[in-house]
Structure formats: structure tokens, C-alpha cells
Length: 374
Image (cartoon, rainbow, N blue to C red; front, side, top):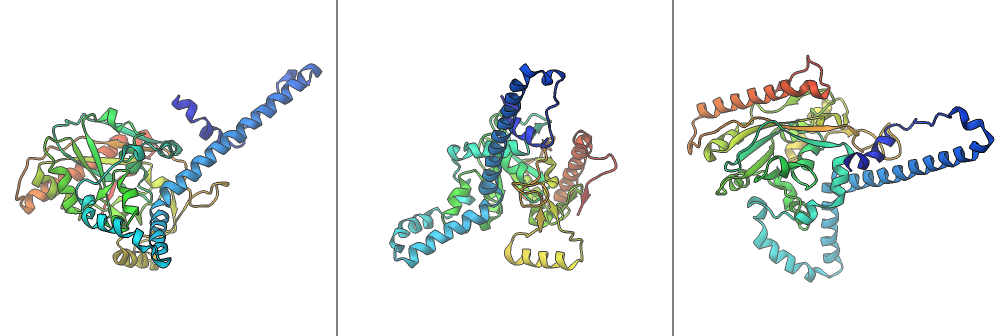
């Protein structure tokens, strides 16, 4: 069934595919039949194109621009209620919001119904996205998944840990993943409910500690360690990771005894091209200043369009392979010293580099390419 489901995408990846006329087509009795076959073939192509277009539009509307667009729509609804004197309709929600404000810091409020929307199946199969396990994880422990790289879209993290269409439950039975995102997105009324329903929670220290403090184990904090800053270096064929100064997650792991697991998403940086922005350029300087002000980065990216393949904001259809590495055992230390943090941090970077080197050849990365830690 999976191969049949991919047919629309495979056909569209071969737009120049043509039928070769067999030698018997010139026979008068066969010409009519051949014409019908060609017409039917063209009909199937148009049908598959319509299905693919619907998937692309859904992808664009429900993920790539959803945070910005849906957040603005939610704010627009609130403004509408106030301007047209329907503000009293907003009062019950505002009251409830006051008591519910800390939910993103306390494990969120996920909905299996939202996580099972068919649009997420289209999203997964658009690239497609794959989750690969290299090691069994004991559900009696808690874990921190360090996700790399950030890329522009963070598609691998969302597709694998925020929808019910990945094989996460089959690969890691007894475990529940929580993807941590910027707290900024939970400050927008109404939109926060939409976001939490997929499973994301805040990336604040309090939120991570809440997930890892749950008794019985079986919880995973998925943290995109490079953050927004790393997205500015998400160029195809480049593997620059901002991790040398990221040590807070190590200290939290030691405090709670959570095992560290490096995760590398091959193909994440191939989804978009960015305007050249080397360190020290005026564009990079402006981007970094805006990031400090707003809290999130603004990479100038482009890829393909919906009706053409040369330019647009749709991501390229490149396969994403999210590889989950070997867990690093961590003994609980309530008050870790700087030396302990540094030692575990070095071990994590070594395991991450080893994971990349062991699997890069499988996904078309040249042997001379290596990770750059910053």
C-alpha cells in the first residue's frame, strides 16, 4: 500500500516520461485502442498531479507557513471581537487562559485526533520522512534526544515526533516524545491550542525538567540544540552545528539522570537554498540582530513552487532520514560540577560525530564531508 500511495509523487518526479509507440501501433485495427490507452494514461497523469497539488497546498498551509499565518488569523479573530463590540465572547476564553497559561510548561495538551489528521500523512510522504533506530531504548529510563541539524523547516523532528504517521511507536514502544519549541509561540491566544494539540511543548528549562521528572520513565525530551541561530547556516551540503556552547541540556540530563541520545536528520539542510550570508556579511549581521530582538531567526530561503520547479517557497522533495543514535548512560547527579558537565558534553559530541560518520555514506554524503562544531 505504501508503494501505491507514493505513485503520484513518483510520476510527477518524471515529468518528461513518454510512452514509446510499439511496432504494432500502425496497424489500423490497433490505432484506436492505442489512442484510448494514451488518453487514459494522460488522464491518470492529471489525476496524480491534482492529488500531488492538493498535498503540496496542504503542506504549505498546514506546516511551512502555519505558525505565522495561523497565529495572525488567531490575533485577527481577537481584534475583530474587540472592534465590533463582541469582546464579551472573548472573556470566558481569557478567564480560562489565565488558569491554563502554564500548560505548555507542564507537558502540554496533545490530541491524537489532530496528530492523526490525513494532512500529516501527506506531509510525511511529500519528502518522504523516515525514522531509523540504531539501538533499543529501555522504556524505564527518561531520555533527551539532541536533534541535529535545525535546518529551515525542522521537518524531520515534526514529522517523526508530532504526528501519528511515523513508525515511532513501533520502533520505541513504551516511550512518549515531547518536541520542545520556542516559548514565544505559546503566548499567542487561540494559536497556542492549535500548536499544543500536535504535541509540542515549551523549550524552557522548567518544561524540560517537568518531562524528565515524570515517574516511571518512558519520556523523551526532543530538543533542537542548534536553535534558531543554526538555521542561518542551513545551506545544502553544509553541516555546521551550533553546539559547543550548548551545555544546558547536559546539566539537566545529569540533574535528572536522563540518558542522552544524539539524533541526526540526514537531508534536513537539503530542503531549501538560502541567500548567501557568510559570517561578517551585512545580511548576516542584520539577521543576527533581528534574532536577538525577536527571539527567532529569519533565513532568506527559497526552493520550488507549486506549479513549477525553479523558484518558490515550497521545500524541495528530498528524502529525510532521521537516525536515532546510541544512548549515553547518565548517572543522576543533583549538583553536577562544571568538570562533569564538560566531560559529558565532550562525550555527546563524540557520539554525534560517530553517528554522522557511520551513516553519511548511506545517504549520499561524500566521504570527505564532516561535521563542523561551533
